[in-house]
Length: 408
Image (tube, rainbow, N blue to C red; front, side, top):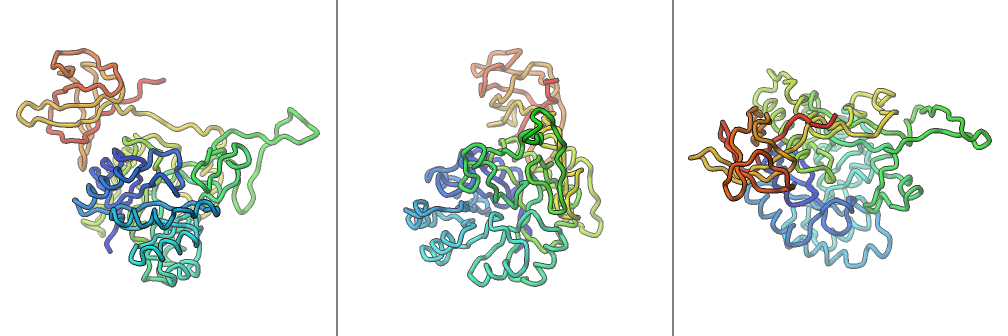
């Protein structure tokens, strides 16, 4: 296969945005058996529509079934696998041998991807899964690019998938009990409360009220808040790692986040593929991903073990410098007017960045804005209200409008 840019989709809108902005494939969860219980997720009708949309443009859909199941979770699983197989999913992502065996028995032709939850960190475990019929291994985040290359050299026939952008997990790729212990929510069954993002101090039992710093040992830190992975500045390195699928984390993230990050990586990867020897990084790509909600960036384990610079000890808050204010639903080439769904309050005369799929954004002032009855208005204050805006340059469906955040 060629190189694949893989995007998250928490619901149907995010799926459409991911594909429109350049994803080659999308991973998503159904209503059962996935590890993002609080994402929108897909019922059978939505899944069917999403698969049809993807396949109509030659793209793929991967379905997550990567929980660590208990006995009762296995009930009805063969029937579920049979149903999603008939809908046409291109692969099922699993982490547990029981789920793996059920998928194999129910549909021997189904491609199976081994989830990062299985914590594959060496070539022997990768070969084990390949020997048992897995098509792809989603490697643990805790690997260097050199280790990824070694795995590819040892097991060249299996597809390797690596994360290139998004949140990092303090535990080994999600194998964490903090959420269970502190919030009664099982991270391995899709309900993580993210207590690793909470603020902690260490207090000795006999010295209440006296706070001590918390240090890490050579294996890492286990509670605190990691910065976000970002490999946009290292496209040549990831493209030459031996991996062929490059994954963006974020099924809980917004449509704006998915489109912005996917669009930046799509342009960077395409630029590299067009001329690998002459590729030069464009700082605009980093600027672009920084306009989506994020924490400070890190390269994770790819160039060595993380240190204190890869952690944020003071805050778990996201950096949100830009607001997503509108989404184009339709465009009239003759008049230059677009039908726009409001996502944040917009004002006549304000300057916005207009992000067209596959293109660099342009800036314009909102000079003409009308309500749904086509009466001129000065402000669009109501959530998801429909307005009509004149654009200085051509736009298309799923073009996004954003502006510098109005919050201090």
